[in-house]
Length: 69
Image (tube, rainbow, N blue to C red; front, side, top):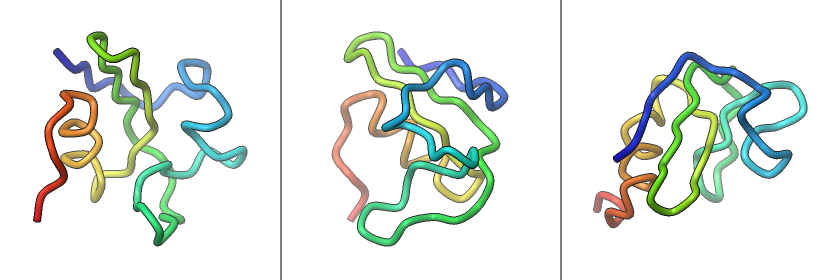
């Protein structure tokens, strides 16, 4: 199960959100958009900040699903 919440910097460790509150998704291409959502995955102890563009990928990751091809 994954939870999608409004972005809350306090929910994240330094590795899951940038210091400026930017999206932590994007793979090799760092995303420079502001984080809009906090995605929490209970099953794998996962939390990441995501912008609207990367929200679906963050949810898939939180659920342990493979990346979309």
